[in-house]
Image (cartoon, rainbow, N blue to C red):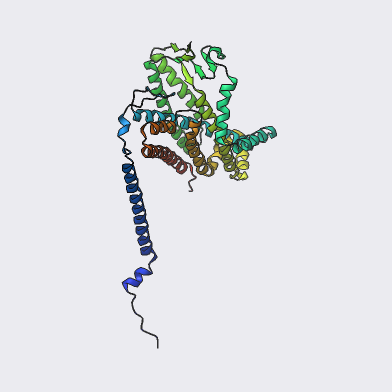
Amino acid sequence: MNPEKTAPTGKSSFRHDPEKRAIIYQVFALGAVLLLGYYLFSNTLANLERQNIATGFGFLDKEASFEIGESLINYSAADSYIKALFVGMLNTLKVSLVGIVLTVLLGTIIGIARLSSNWLLAKLSAIYIEVLQDIPVLLQLFFWYSIFYQFFPAPRQALNPFSGVFLSNRGLVFAVPQSHPAHTYMMIAFLVACAGIFFLRRWARKRQEETGKLFPLFRTSLLLIFALPLFTWAFAGAPTAMNTPILRGFNFTGGLNISPEFTALLLGLVLYTAAFVAEIVRAGIQSVSHGQTEAAMSVGLKPGQILNLVILPQALRVIIPPLTSQLLNLTKNSSLAVAIGFPDFVAVANTTINQTGQAIEGIAMIMAVYLFISLTTSVFMNWYNKKSRLVER
């Protein structure tokens, strides 16, 4: 005789429910992490108080009392620590943004050249990739930094290849237009042209899908980029005055100076990271079926059109995820600037820590800045990845 079946009790049903057990485990794990964090935080505060070490961010309003060699904004030693740290963050953003753009361009060119039917071009690209990947980026920074001080003369004997351009061991100095309101208007015109190109590109794509007619987008974009700022400059008075560098004492004053530290850092980061980006681009291109190329050739597309219209759009879905990782590596590797004297955020924060003794706050700010830059880069690349992925009908 079969025993009578009884309904499971609430206790047993909870014990055998994996979803409810998972919630309990997560609550316990979160509680353990919070308790550990509270213990570490309270223990740190107690140790700092016992050692009579001040805590908090009140030091940020005090006078920094140190100079910074390069700054995108006006700065002096009489300014506060917070402004000094802001200058360092701008320097980090400058080298990161310029480096990202140059790395993507150079890596894409070398990756495509790696697959070229030209034997010499393909081998040179392969040699570049193998050599640059195998040399640590810090050694590359030292190499490029030493080039300026070993092979370039002092400012008094500076090379002058063109009028208003001087090259020495203090960097590259060249003439720039003097400050004028017309330049602000030109920048606004440039941004308006970029916005116009964006909407024009969307309209041209929609027009092509509906009618099959191609619009000369590239030539029109070039015309807008150059013509609109040029017309703005002409209507704003066409200023031509230049701020020319002049040798005074042991260095140049005036003009725009690109320092050896910035150049060495940029060259090292770009050349090193571009070698990895080139392999990513090569793998992305090879992931596209060769039948796509044959189909494009059968309808009469030229090699350049096949690459731009058929291969690269499909390869992007393979390229973008690892490319994001390499761009993040470039941003984080910019912290090596302290080794060659470039005043990035880490260098300025280290000076601040040495002068104030606020080590915990300084390290926390370094972590926060690099976390913000990395997350911003990831968000943009993830958005672009979603926008460029293939949409199935």
